[in-house]
Image (cartoon, rainbow, N blue to C red; front, side, top):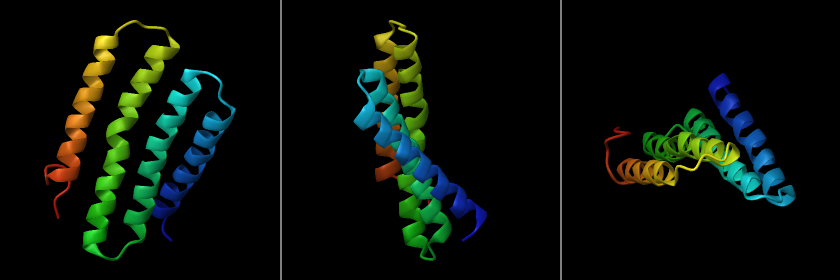
Length: 117
C-alpha cells in the first residue's frame, strides 16, 4: 500500500466515524447536515483508496468518478453547513449551488467531461 492509498483509507475511516457519531448522537438538523458532509468526504477517501490499489484501468475510471462525486458535494455541503450554522438567510444561494452541483454530478457520471480514459 502506498501513501496515497493510506491517506484515502485514513480519510474514509475518520469521516465514517464522524458521520456515524453525527447520525446516532446528533439531535439537531445541523448535526445531520455535518454527517452528510462527512459521508461526502468518506466517498472521496474510499475513491482515493480504490484508485491507488486497483490495477484495472476501467475500475480506476469508475473509482475516479465515485471519488469526484464526493468532491463535487464537499464544497456544497460545507457552504450549506456554514449558512445554517451562522443562520444566514440566503435560501436562493443554497438552492443554486445544489442545482449546479447536480449538474456537475450528471456531467461526471454520464459523460467523459470530468474523467476520460
